[in-house]
Length: 416
Image 1 (cartoon, rainbow, N blue to C red):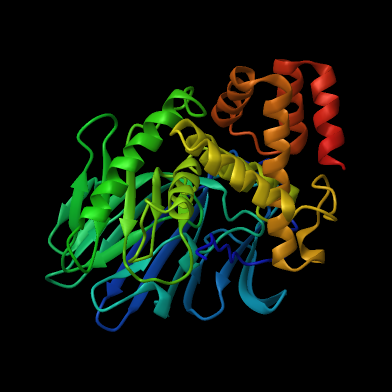
Image 2: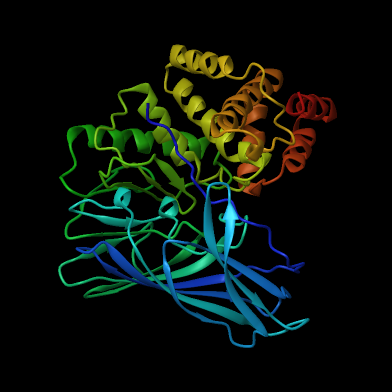
């Protein structure tokens, strides 16, 4: 069965005690598609209002780090950091006390694009490629970015939004997304189609023209977005959305905060309930991506996306499918530890999935049953707009909307 696969890297906590402000990222990427290699110049800039004295950046150990520049730093080092079954390169930059000026750290590194991220017709780098540095435990830190991609003659580049500048062999994109989600697809030819009603939904495919099955999926995606914009996303609607179909058949589908998703399967068919739920799940990650992969707040990402997909399934008229999927998920939650305080690193990944995805989905269904659909959707819409990222924050929201008794009930469920 096709499953969403998360394989983010576990790293060590930052030693700094900062007054944090939003950093920015500027990336210049040179891709050699035929060799499946790249060179990256990555600049991480801290604003003057950020008083962080120690900055840690983790980088895939398979990449060759060629240069580290950190003007005004008093010390910098590169070490290997152990995590569960692998190691990372960690760049540590130390500044003097109370820095009051904007500072940047610039890395230059080269690497090979992993086999699962290229075919004879496409090379792509995105969240699950793990090609970008990130601060420890902050893979999903929100950053404004500029991404410039250079490619040989005859190649084109696509990203999660149209280029802000474009000339032969050079494409520049700008936006805001999480630290690891900057995305570039490189190919000689792209096949593209867009929805004809509602917010523009664009499908971008490589390797072969879009099929009738892809056209059905495009219409379904438009229907899913329209439903979400009326319900969970009504306070923060999707204005545009892009689905990439690279046809690599590796890893799993995943959503991107910058209104996009990667669907790598060449045989994906939303006439099958499983595939329809995957599509709806990944689209909903536009709203559900602010918890941490590393702790129990991941249910705010994955259970919320799972139940959002079930809400769409039910709203589309498939009540039987909705009930069957709820029953299937519930069967796997017997004997699981409490969601509140769950430590995913004490268990194998299947237990993480049983608790964060399945048990969390059951709790949301029980909450909806307790307070009714209208009030439940009000809670989801508000949570999505507020980008709720902690369990106490979600409990407080439920108390505000549904009352203290329901808040106490939810807390007990999370701890049961």
